[in-house]
Length: 214
Image (cartoon, rainbow, N blue to C red; front, side):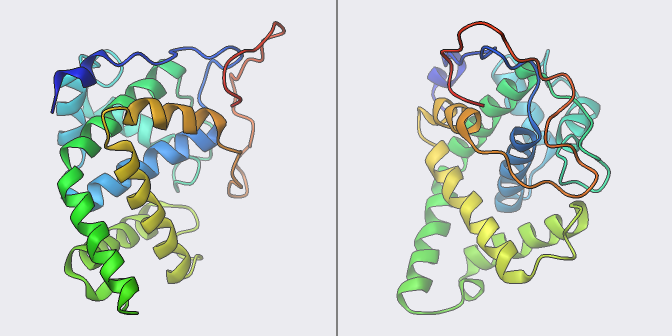
């Protein structure tokens, strides 16, 4: 890991947005789920990354990390009402890019096996690295998410592979900026019944907004 990851500058408070939307919270948690499924590491790796990046004020312990991840409105225990402020979301972006860079070789090898499976018209589950990743991702998703027992396997597999491809994209030296920009411009997703699309605490500025759309 190069030190440049410690000095990346992100727009810490985009105009008109004070807390993360449900879509941002869900995407951050899914990317962390993808990293966890690849490596088998979870909270320890995230907390170590936060320490290395001097982000302990935002992600300093397991309780804080648990709150941030369970803010995902797709999670069973969430309800979509837990707030994540922009500084916390920004810290998670930095951590995800940092961990993706650490796992870049494994991500690339897994994607190479996926490409080989597609070329040979084989199930991705028959490739060792891809199969292990998919098994872990689907198991974690079904146990933690609201609709985990409703989505069919094909739908969840497509989601897991999309997350894997995104992690490769965000593992580059400019991965944090790419992820941050993608989050701020991502259309709002459909949330489970009982979750509000508009998060509590989202303030809209009445002045000119020159930042990327949220």
